[in-house]
Length: 231
Ligand code: ADE
Image 1: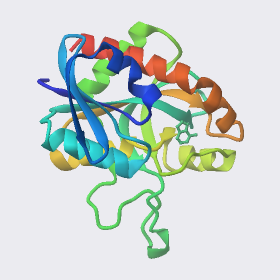
Image 2: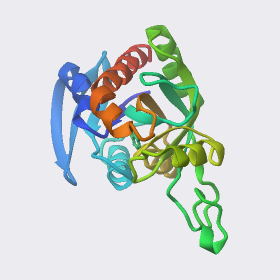
Image 3: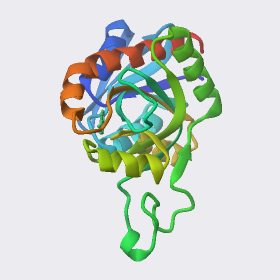
Image 4: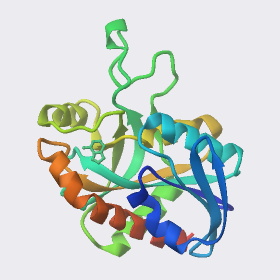
């Protein structure tokens, strides 16, 4: 890997990397700040995409086109869908899908992109392996490899959790991963998403998110630190 794109959606998800980013060059484009430098001795481009799939998609395409990254790592927090996951546990993406893509009145199953060849975008096996290894070395909470479901929605009810877990096979839900994954697939660039659970996407999600997002973001950061250090 020559140059790695590192994305978080919110300031809490990137600030610890930013603090340790050396010899940075800053470029602003499309309202996003791209910070080039070295992190753990590796060339990286760090950015805060903003929340949601459009922000994440634009950010990822710019990382690829303007900065020539040859891998993308997303770090941040998510709501747990798999009932075995607790707050603080980790999901490493095996693949990503948009749960709010829904043309079902036209006969397309929920989560599938009409007329597209695929709607589920696999993460790169080597990046997954490195992330899982880093997470297991950190040894804080459980590490699960699974499907990351993204939508432009903060999920906060049990019925949706059940649907997303049982019907779409999601391990966790967030708002950017599948956009990153799809843009990476469209450009032939490897990616992985690392998410620490800030909540369980249920009726308490907004309270839990407020209380645990910073700690969860920090745990995801420490995995990225170990992962990049081992690359
Ligand atoms: N990010 C963290 N928790 C989330 C949730 N419950 N829904 C969507 N994105 C999230």
